[in-house]
Length: 406
Length: 157
Image (tube, rainbow over all chains, first blue to last red; front, top):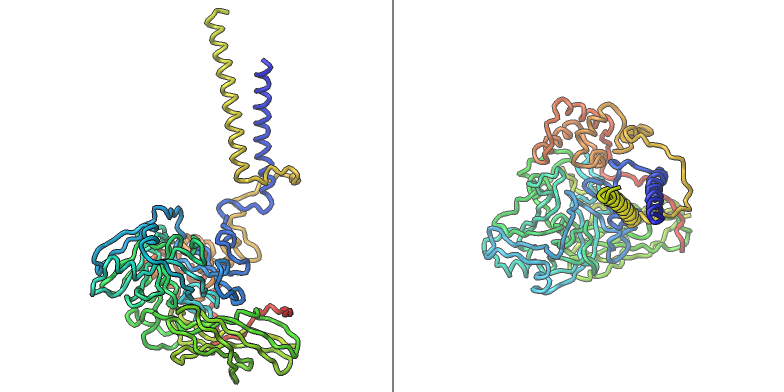
């Protein structure tokens, strides 16, 4: 009997505790409580991003860096921009992940597990500059449609993987091969399973380059989910959309790949220059290949106030798509005079290069430090916006920071 | 009491005890699971506050300083039509980032209908486009703007 009453009391107090739980729980939730339907996951925690990253879009996720966040020679995950076209895939199991190589121009269709890719082919690591084709879009006038990237949609991390060429050659490439197209597991925004958010690619010549990787590591670790875990195609120097995330199929095509965002106006610019705001027919738009020469001053952060008589040490990175940066300059008088910066060689082809200079200001006042890079074909960054195009791609105008000397 | 009745009473008692034990087990399990996901909850030192219910419905479409809090859209004629038709697939941020005239918004809507599974907007299309061009007008930027919103700071070293 004693035992029974104990059980009974215990049960009651458990109930009381449980009800208490819910009440206290409710009271604790009040502070900053957001109804479930309004809840947005915190992207900074979710993707481990720096608090100064700028969220342009939360569905799909599009987040960019600011110039000063890109100061590291090798961009850490925390400061890498995110450009998604669809919804980040869930429930990825790397153990069962496979990559299928198929298409009109393949000799033998093959499927590889991640383990097979890693063990069968030699692994390579390269530091590769990836810039969104629409980086700088926000500056175009009339405005171009899409996420309004300012300057932060570029990064240069190290990628480890196997050469796409080795895998394609293992399956066999027919002589009529023209292009490769990737396919991935991310979902379309409309959740229509028949639609692919993005399926782009590149000509065989780019696909077969040493540096074009099927990567499974970024900066020495598994690729973060939002950047393409467990397998990403990485093609440095080209619009970052060529570097497809969450890849499970590569098709060798006997024609230019016609997947989503290969056609129409996506990642294309007018084949011939047009006036700002001019309408351009789809058939007059040409696919963007190599990205243009560009640079960023990553130190100091814009807005620096400094003492007169002190030299300002500036530094940053420059890149030039398929090419190298041959010369780097800065100006403090809006381009009237230019001074040379020292610039390092890239650690490997398609990596960005680091520049630095010591800037002297003749008198106190407001200055802008402008940086401009020249590529190995003697093409220089423009100070003004380059040619207007309907989708606002390829803005490689000079970066500048504001400085006050007092 | 017959033997059978005694037996029944005993069965009932055992049954009741089993139910209690099961209830206890379920509750303890529940609390443990909850603790796993929310360990800070059992910190009883945090002071409790008066309990009040939050009217979720009202909160959902709250307007503050002329802005619809949930989406960031300007509170103006056509707001709810825009929310109901333009924020299902993508974020309102994609809308507010862009500046287009009526012709280009209409072309964008057509593109979304042709390729992105957007439905026929009917009479709402005019309401939506009017809302967008009125509240998010295009601004002339020229070939290069001056640097604005500079966050000045003393450079150390």
